[in-house]
Image 1 (tube, helix red, strand yellow):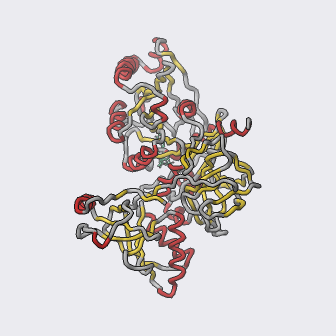
Image 2 (cartoon, protein in one colour; image 1 turned 120 degrees about the horizontal axis):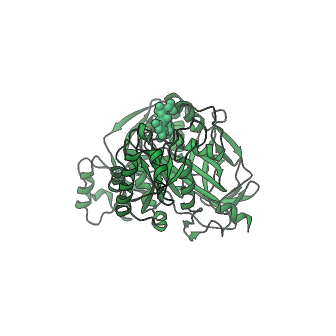
Image 3 (cartoon, helix red, strand yellow; image 1 turned 135 degrees about the vertical axis):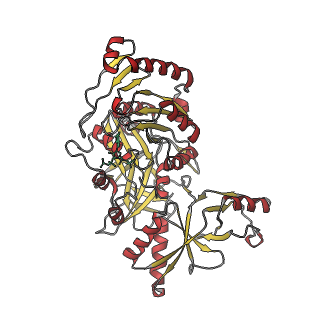
Length: 530
Ligand code: G4P
């Protein structure tokens, strides 16, 4: 095995999450710069171009200048092979953002030091907690005036319900940002604002006991303040505990400024020591160990139109165990077929690289002729098991969809079904009818525009969307339920998914509660299983 296990053990796969504008793109670019994956020197891109370079595949993204899809980037650093899963950076994010977290072993949360915890961070964080993914916090933009450090930590603890453990501690912020104090080494690392696009600049490491040096670099006042804060911190903050970090109960916190390259490499070095190698995954036959087993993978994302010229569809899968090589045959469990994956590729920035091999922890994109669905398992032909499905996240916006030209019924049904299969939208039907009336549910309202745009451009079907007032959807967990006898509130709507499973729509949380109260034994769930 030797080499093969080494390859897997050097993999680190994480997702990077933040509220828009906190600095996720900038930080990602700086990571890549350290890894030498892309050369940014002398060509630092403005936000618009940087975004386009990384993940703008669809026309609609270009039109709006936002990123709808998520991308995967790989680079090497310090003997590690790092996979970063980028998540859409717009408020109107989609279910893909959530699903990306299913393919990661840990998450890096970027927070703007002057804003603290923001809405989108909260949502993504919930999913990390559900999956117990370890979370690493990078508090960014210290070169701007920041909120009080203790208050920032307090906010993370209160709002997100996770204990914090600062690995380093900022000295000042904004114009008077002096650097960080590294708690483990008891050293101050002085701030240097490097040229954009170059690596970390000339910083000085000063031991906390080297008083004169310290005063000459950070000044008397900051030195006194720092010593006070260190005392406070040692008494008040949670102790460093790697087991708790890996269980997702404690988040290590770092401070820095991605724009000026400060604290990025320090973060990377500590982070890599604390994260895990690719983790075992749950399947119906038990946990599958990445190193002990042959190739297996699951599909977590399907993306259409990555290349307009070819009108193709790519299925992204996370390799969970073993090694993949392009010549081998694999079994698609859900389809019951043995096949060769066509054009396995890795998406690097805006380029695609055809792969000859990949290992557990890696993400590959394969050409999908329309056979894969989110959550599908692939393994060796002689094996038979299925990875635990990816939950369906509750949409929060609903609309009724009507096609304008009834002659195009077939294209309409085909288009909307395919788009739903990719997981960008969820489709439902009225409880007692067929496909005449379709209700679409989405996680972010932008997906409505994506749907309309794609049906027009790819399937030549014009539609009208009529917004519905529902905001809450619940799957019914009870197996034998007589829906006709269910007594809900007057605003409740009964619908079914494409497999015929019954669901309920509600306008508000109160109605959800009332319905559960009125129907003894009724069990409702916020997550559906594929
Ligand atoms: P996002 O992916 O999380 O949405 O954020 P992104 O990296 O695009 O950063 C948002 C804005 O914040 C950008 O400015 C970026 O330059 C700036 N920024 C990122 N990190 C830092 C930092 O450490 N310090 C400071 N001062 N600014 C930072 P922009 O003006 O919106 O775009 P651009 O044209 O300057 O790129």
